[in-house]
Image (tube, rainbow, N blue to C red; front, side, top):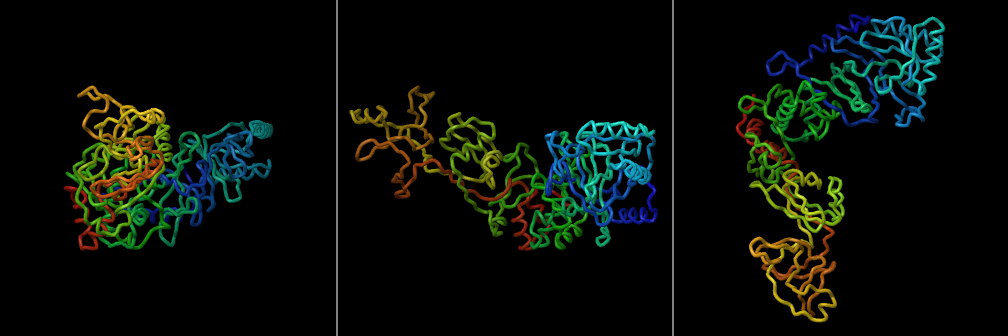
Length: 566
């Protein structure tokens, strides 16, 4: 794009931008992070911008134009007032336009002057429309084809080279605060929006009322989703991450350890061919922009500028979590691949940190668990019990089995906790109707009373939940192992004869004394330790280590096995 703007302003802004770009790790290459902003978003189809003064629109060559300081950007499609519509028949505004092809202009200003003249003549909105070759003039944002054709015919009759077209989902339109279109461009144009905050001496822009450093690009995916991507220099990205991943009041060495982990994780995930590198939430790192920056965490970023974590000369994927619960975990016990620098370590630091997540407890109703299983594409009507099949050497669940009418459903490693929304995979589960059954049987005489009540004739201390033949004997229920199941609907021997259990409390004598158990299986109680996946650095552990006098390098080398910091 070629612009006729004030040369002094151009030079002032560009020189300032060059002065604030970070030099990464001694090289002259600027590293930018591209963050998908998921929150706050008003709608998937539009986004609001507010500038510190005029909003500038840049291309890849840093040539730019300036517009009003308040803009709403929308996908070119159907709207009623400011709201996107999936039903085009209800649209008050839409993607039908008339375009004037008499000239392709090299600057926004030249096209805008012509648009103003056409608007005065035809009493309709006209505005510059950027295509690959430059600017043309577009008119109207009609919801129906006929209106666009009428405007194009009127223009053509007056000697203009005009035609109508439908730009549905193919363009992005900028509206000013009076809700009139001022600029439209084809969706694949590499344009970036920002403004300049002279108080901070940096590029900034408000996106849906939240301020971000850097600039914003809009990308349409899946036809109707408008992605908001924040392009920001690495160190300034970290200003908006570190205070949202760790409390800014914690010790400086813990803040520095977090800064290095966040920096390393971000750079590790920068891949040129992807649309964005990070999201602004827990899917990547929590990034909330300029409004949430803190002086202490900015200092931690500045004092570790460019430093990252390496294993065998290569950047690590620096995973971290809130609270380990007493030990971190090997990567292969949570995910799949064994990573040499992600080894489980004992973590008394986390236990001594005062974390509110060191131990936890949560209770779910059976129907809630059934609902989650069915949301995960299982066809379950009844849940009989939950069995933890295998745990790791660091106490986290490796396999959890749900006993259901649809059979045994197995969830391995991280997936059980994700299914249930538990804080960690270090957990146990108990419920009143889940017991181990001894499969030794004692005869009970068949009496008319028993037959009348439907008591199983072969009888036993407890009737098994499942009746399967063993490979060893071929007999039903004769293997010597324990089986787990529900007491609901089973029979016990009482002083009044066999009795069916049905939502009652039962007292058992055990080595621990007399226990009163509720046989109702509607509730499952989960008790666990820690918060997060348990891989890499424990943030509460880092807090405690900092309080005990450890440096940030010592913290990182404790939680990431065999690494170097440089």
